[in-house]
Image 1 (spheres, helix red, strand yellow):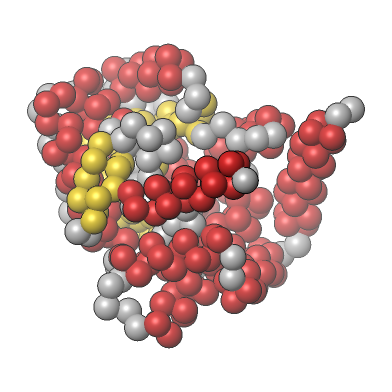
Image 2 (tube, helix red, strand yellow; image 1 turned 180 degrees about the vertical axis):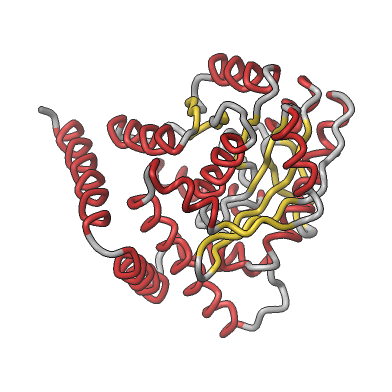
Length: 314
């Protein structure tokens, strides 16, 4: 076994142990442990908390330095809660998640109607709160509406492969059809097939991971966001709904914004800009639940890329 294979195997074993251990302790204890650990990471500093601070400073520009410090700690604790729930949630939890999720927003009637009558729908959301729990709510809502309890989503291909397979398995048992982001042909086929069958597609869309996103004005500064949700809506005639999950003390909360119109492919850039504006407005309601530990704005993306290049050159 090579060094790389050994490291991959160790990472897989660590995740497997995490899943077993967290499920073996009471939920409140597991959550407190993860939140405390994440709070310690925030106070210690590092690249992740530093980037989160930079992103939150743009999202909440009037925050004083001490307020930003508190936001970063709260944000890392929120991120810790997300991971504690990842390691705990399973298929039997889906009805409980549905019951403990508070759904609000002007677009909620459109979402419920689309689920009930089989209108193809693209749900676009940021990395906020627990998007897996929001997906579990959707699966149960589909089931209660007499529809196939599954939707399609895309996942970044993690390394090592065994860890990626664990996350795919976790999401599948919650009721998600998961396709890999790296296989564009298979992803396109699965996503369009789901929509043309009157189903739902959910895509996290607050960060461009390919470098080929649509340029947008994000709170007055340039950024790129993925075009996928808007392009799918234009291609299939699907409803495009921005959604923002958040944590609540006793469960979860999800705000559904009004549908974004996408008449045709020519309307895609404007639709992506509209998503950017809606995401920012929704995230500002509870900024600490935005898990933005990676660069979002173009200036930060380029700075990190230049730093990586300098490291390679050295």
